[in-house]
Amino acid sequence: MKRLVIVDPGLITVLSHNYSEANALVREAGVLQLAATVFCHREAHVAVRQIPATPFFRQHSYGYTADARPAADFMSIDFCNRSTLKDLEALPVTLTCDDFVLFPTVTCNIVLAICQWLGNFEPAHAPRFGLCLMFAPDANAAGRSSAVALDTYQRAFAQVPAGLAGRLVHTCEIDAISRMYEPILGVRPVTLAIPTWAAMPDQPSMTDEMRISFLGGARAEKGFHLLPEVIAAVRERHARARFTVQAVGHEADLVRSVTGRLAAHRDVVTLINSPLSDGAFRAAMRSSSLLLLPYDSDRYGLRGASLFTEAKLMGIPMVLPDGTAIGQDGRRKGIATTFEAFTARSVADATMRAIDRINQLSRCARQVARSERAGANGYLRALLSDLGCPS
Image 1 (cartoon, helix red, strand yellow):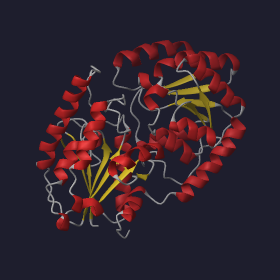
Image 2: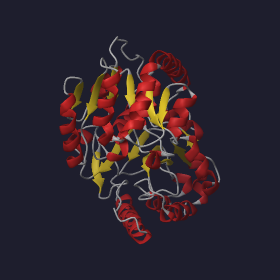
Image 3: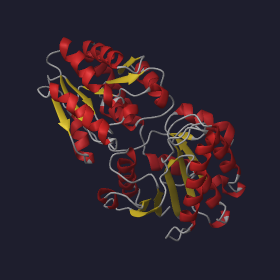
């Protein structure tokens, strides 16, 4: 391999894992002595363009309609795939057999376009390709159950030329999703946590302060709206607890409402009102004794989460939703407490249980971090190895 070509229509803002993932992939490409070229959404923010990334795609791999009816779902998915195929066919790069073309966030919105585009390549002269399948095959780009999405994946994979089988690798973030794709693909995707920025040698700062953090996008499905009540309940019992809340997201009304309610706790809450660079995000994580991921289990059942992966690698205990893959993993490894209901009371109770057990959770978290770091050989390296490429 001589070049990595990252193709990500979902790369548009610094408020998603796509941004940190692109940076991580470019860094690893440098270690592997691969030149890196990145194509992103045409409306990408300035920071994204500075990766550097070339603005190009018209549609977003995560776009969806609020109308949940199958007909609306079909029209949205079909439109995005048709538009993406036109863009792929006009991609301003000449690809050779020495390239590795990676699609790091494949959803039903773009999977059919990708597989149709693969049919344009002669297997003997084609690049190698990698597809990271983000959601379960029966979920649309909003993470909702969708028969249309499942049909789209099935039709897409059926169109991949048989001659490309040895030049194509699929990957999923968690093993439960990999298993779901196996009967459709005929082979199980490689299970790999998405790389972002935690592949650094240091550990979180050890201080006497109990600092509980909510970081990442301020979205309803991530339980952002629950925070004022959670903080109020926790500080009643643990007066010394301090909190860091990142209040940045696309839902302006939600952010404004929650930020206003958090004003009552300004003496114990540090608000972050802007996107963070990778370095600043690491610093916020390192100052955390406990990370809150008060996510909706109905939306995150079989989804991975980059913050979950980062916390594991950095040795930070967590509060996680029960009934999810990340919750099950965190509880099994002894690094998290879980909450059953998507309510402030349930999240607060799980947080207080975590505080009561913080020494035990922290010890386990540090042990897990050491183990996971020791077994991490690099995302690109693992994919290229699966394709039989020397690294």
